[in-house]
Length: 153
Image 1 (cartoon, rainbow, N blue to C red):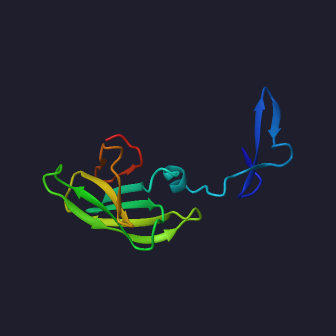
Image 2: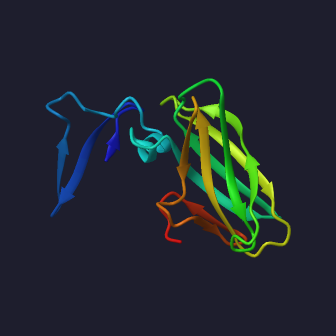
Image 3: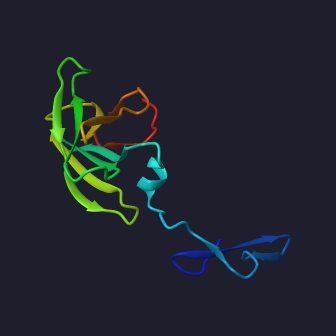
């Protein structure tokens, strides 16, 4: 695929030495107005989604995408370093807003010498609470590793 600009493109492929171009009848194909990765993950169905998570230097770092449902909101993670024997909560900070309107929040938590951290994400706005818990499988991040939306437990 060849890109004509940031918002449009044409398709090009070669078969048996012959090159073919498809350009939508000379109109070029257009990217949708929203094409950031959180918007693709969240779609219209999810109010909160995990972007990435990592565990390094005794710190859990989680990037969260939330739909902007209200000015006042709380974003955070509930996590454990001992397989849910104890639970801790860490709250996030808004870092920026994407072109799609989805807000990116950063959550960090000290986890000491944990060899693995499990967590779920919560988002509270307008009296409602939304969760991303990896489709009821809980997110798991071993040290010096990362997790992303939809990863197996």
